[in-house]
Length: 397
Ligand SMILES: [Fe+2]
Ligand SMILES: [Fe+2]
Image 1: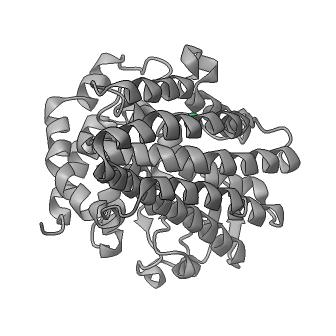
Image 2 (image 1 turned 30 degrees about the horizontal axis):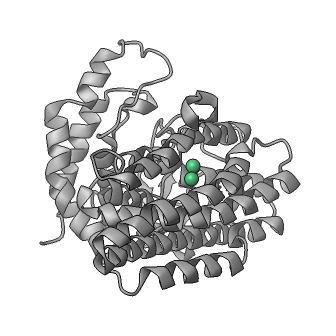
């Protein structure tokens, strides 16, 4: 398949803009950017489009009725023609953006699990929280972390819920038990996505799902899309199990590091999201290994095991990329001489054109400044050239 050309994406952007209407609530704001004459934005807008493909699968409602009522924007958002234009692009976007990072799995699953558990146990806790411990402007760096992690976490486990639908024997019930933990066992205040919202609010951020979509950079979108590619395609079922295997295991460690960090440096922040995971994911790891991986491999043999490994490796690589990238963006911002910290005041209004580190930054007028995620602004946009390639900034209008 050829690379998806930007023309259909520009058309899609117009369709999505129209369906969103003027001043949409976050729930029904389905816009994407237009690459225009900046070819370095291609990956970014393609990932935005793929995110919109996946999000079209979910029920989203605003916290209160919009001025025009709820039905009109809802009908536009889930309009058949809108959904069809998203669905038409999805397979090619997946082939181009996700498939290259999803090689076949190799090896023996029992040895793999053993090695993975030891490796995660012995790994240093978290490079990001270690950086923060010695950094200035911790609040701003942490805010950007929360924003860049929010595309998936504000609807946590909605992706993996799709893998639980169907009929496939006992492992299904084990995965369902994990899923209901993710949904707080039906107690809304304990739902993991709701706990994440509380952390965002305690850092002064808007907690609406999609509330910061214009500030998700390419790598944040890539992680969201890798997870959704796994779970929105039933052919990936064994890889989904591999995702859960790696994610539940890695998460118990990373959330413990974040919990300790928040307790020490932001004692007033709501850290329940991290405390809950540091505890419950110990159980989820065991459940995935004993009640999903083992019986599935017993039933379907080594080829199922290799697919599980493929899913775990995809997840490991996606987490590592997103984590390394986030840290590198923070470090680049901390090193920029023209930086001043602060999250965008109105995250979805009056959006300036996005730029990448490879855009023609020198061509931006001297008076233009750019906002980098929730970190802050660079008054000299040329400094953005030394940021990681998947970073995104917007011209402040
Ligand atoms: Fe969770
Ligand atoms: Fe979990």
